[in-house]
Image (tube, rainbow over all chains, first blue to last red; front, top):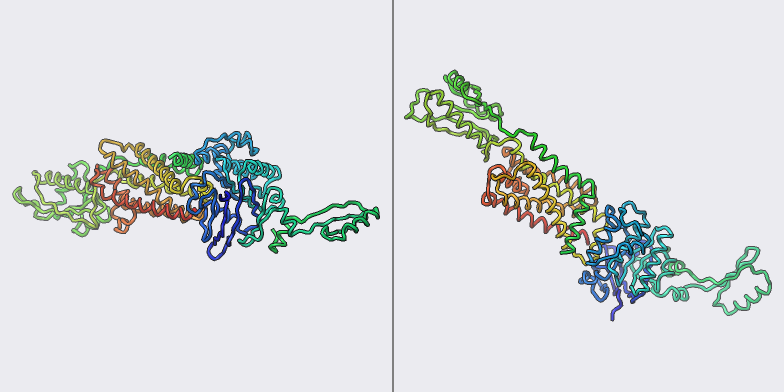
Length: 280
Length: 352
């Protein structure tokens, strides 16, 4: 049986500009795939292809077994989307926004509970135009959940948010994962991707450069180091993969001058730069 | 159907939550009936006639004085009378042959009535009655005179109407087409704000979105049209209500179709304002031509608003029925179908 989200050899271009170039991946049930890349890398276009907003020039986008270029409406009842832009109805109240979208899904929703869940309890009667950016983003997440989706597409859900709002949203993402929801999370926040994702895909110039678990990527591309800091401020870095390191560590400890000593591993950002040659 | 109802309810709510669209919607309902009520409700009672009647000036003057509502102005030749008619100095002209006084009841004198194309048929009829009354006073008997009409300029179909009734077709067309502005404004706002894309990733199809917007456009434009006509006191036994309702609905669809097209070509709210005003003003030219046929050009018949205004003119001012306006309805229906289809297709491309 297909994974809930399957992209196969996807190609899409805007005129001569190839935005998505032979992209293939899948997201399993209850899995979070972090889709990482700088602005303009093709993340949002990939999400649009997978949600049926765009039709691929080549390849196929399947969600819950449906071909999204032909049967998007069959799948859409079971998917939720958080857009990068704040596309709510600003003159409507938060409650009216959620109720309206619930009606489009033919669902009855406990608006108060949903608003409470995203940290907007008691704000249901307020017009969205009076909300802060973080509140709007949390309401967008709530909107994506009105139909209790099996698949979530989250396009930069915490971009530019205050730490509290971002943390609320990350918490919800992890809760949904626990419920078995398959999640495609696009972001250029490597720390977030590292913390939330089961696997990450690096996308650059429309192509997937690498896809794997964060741990394996760190093992494969990162250098494991032991960093020793001395009282005079000097730092010594020893490779954990060097067979002579244990004897060197023993010698340092014997000297008795060590202030701190800890291991470090490469960050996803460093690996991204190493793999793509570009900064995020 | 539930989705369409939800979308339509949302669109209606948005229309009234938006201060601009709410204002123009309410404004036309208030302003047009006020304008209608302040314009004269009766026609001018005194008619000025221009005469070229060699040797009869004294007699005519005396006879005119005895006729209520008639004023006589004399000219030296036929062409001066024609010019006076064209210049609007007189309502109509009468050219009476010098042999007229010698005419007897057995001889039918030929009198030329000069009328301008801008004078409705009702005025001609009034001129005819006044002329006969005048001759009756002049001769002592009512002549079975042969009245030869000389039309200066293009002929005009219609009757003499109070100014406010002449303007009715133009006003009601204006009211219906205002929805072009409101609806396209809302659509553009929805596209620019991105909310439409959030709708299109739900099970709702673009067809349902268009159906809801068409429904809202129809409801608002028709509602406004009916409200304005009611405030103007037009729902009388002299007006055929069913064809009038059909015309309102066809006009509302026309406004909706144009709103779709305008929205599809507008990049943002500002550019949509330019497009919608341009479209609105162009569509208002044919109704002006219906009110003032003398400025009419056959080219204006290309625009569907001509048929809308013409049908309103026939239905509201001349007691016309279905058969009289069937041609207008057929053209409007065709235009509505074409505009709605093209508009929906263009908007769908815009969404994608």
